[in-house]
Image (cartoon, rainbow, N blue to C red; front, side, top):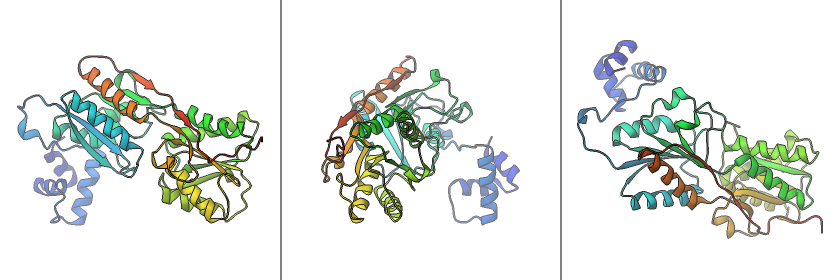
Length: 337
């Protein structure tokens, strides 16, 4: 599909389509709406590099980071940049919002920057073959994989922890300390992402303990941030809350929950214990130190680069799962003693 096709289908001139694509202000809202509707309907991606079709080979590797406020990614980005630089490659990074489309962003980057491959840091877990058909270079999913999608595993690589199993492990850590009334702090909406996987691990652990998961024990924040978690837990504590522990699906969320608990007059861990997954540096220095399952961020970044460069050089796609390490802080009380 070309700009001329877009113009014909939307009933405007080619110059109007060009102005819309370049986000120019001199377009009526009705024309802009029609053009954008056709673009979305036909999955059109403008090729801003079409003018230079004869070009030298690029050494650029794309990195698309989904979730611009996520501090968990810092160590991974540092490792990716370090290893790409050591391999003589140039890293081209784009950060997008948590609701933006990383595949379309990657496809645009591929065309504009002549990428050899892409690492997606954070993303959806339900890609379809039709969606990734936009990409013409190999890619690696870092920190997640296509758990709910329909991709051929030979078509992409991934580096991640086993989110469902690690969430199960976190809840069982609480259970071993005598906790049975365990709440979960999750992000809402429950989409096909690590949130869904970690919530599934929480529910499986409760069922194995003979405890029926209750909707009232699932605290839903708007997103993964400290602020959102703080608001969600504060609101939940306005109602009766007899849980003795909270499993937070991310360290940031646990930090927000700890403040909400303190402000409600509840001590951590004496009145309510808390455990999370991630291993952020900051969670090691709060009081009490957060008990969490630490992800191997440096290795995740390094292995993502290794897999991608291997495929670019003719190797096969692979899928790696890495273990977490329990950091026993002081945020979990042992009720058995």
